[in-house]
Length: 433
Ligand code: SF4
Image 1: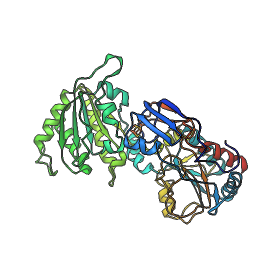
Image 2: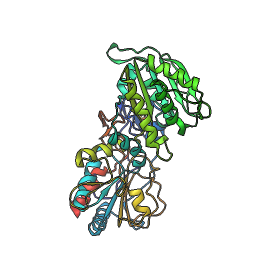
Image 3: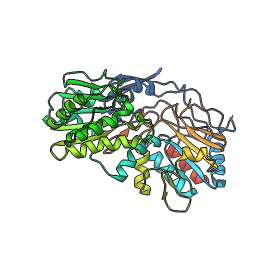
Image 4: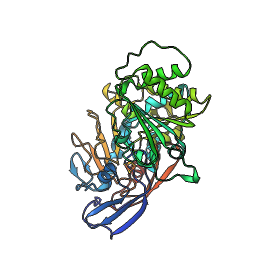
């Protein structure tokens, strides 16, 4: 960890340098082919950028110092104060969790030691998937399998281009594939009106079809599709923008596909009981695997959400919403959802970790709050303790788990600012307990 003095985050930059094959932490895809240059003006993405990666890497950090009660202090004092608050809390809530593998391991260790609860800021969206995975299971693909093999890609009710600006460029229409496996031109189907279709172009994209229902009706459309594929008669559909003939045409595409993929992003499915839509998407893949190869691909996973769930899973056996209050991991997706707990006045301290984007400020609460955050993090009021931390893959090295859950990617230290990692600060707090 840098010296116990307040960390510097502007001014003194290391010498200019060009970094190749940089992994990007700013969405769940973690593209690892960027080129980033460090100059005396800051970082610049010079190859394989997108709007999100430019905003993330090139963001100018404001001055930020460790604070206690809104007043600048030495880092050692902020750590001591954080340890004091955590030490006397009966039920600390460890939320946000936008950090890397090492940071999440440190959170879990601290929660275990202090009888706390862990939950990621974006777990509400993740639970749209977990409920289906836990209850009926699924057959899913990876980014690489989809890129290499898909001949039909169905985007179900999700604005994939907005969430992952390079998904179409890298996965749907890449210039080449691995191992000489070159899929034929892909048919791309959008279920939902208003989805950004601008990425569906290029030499690998064939027919582009849109079924312009409301995006929240994508589950109903897929349910009708499954019914037709399974030979059922249906009354005329009551779904605006989609006819039975449209469903039958899509069924024909599905029957002919050699490797079909249904893609959804849980953060886009922001409506009640969206897990039922996810169940339809994964059910479609299961049905079609009777006669061909068909798989699901779930996207999303910004702010280290996939990493937090993965680390929590391998440390405790459960994917977030875990309490260590009894001395052993106790899992309850309702009782230990930190968003609900804060609304219902549960817990007596919030420890919020947000090292990636400045938009992930802590929710409103009257609880005393300790924030470990990237400089510039949006804060409605000064927390009891604020400690500026670095962004993994920008200010320090680290690892993040990719959205398809099959690989954790190494992140480089690009030397933007001299800031401690979440893991180092959390370990220091634990040592000071
Ligand atoms: S698509 Fe996502 S991971 Fe890839 S460069 Fe853009 S923000 Fe980074």
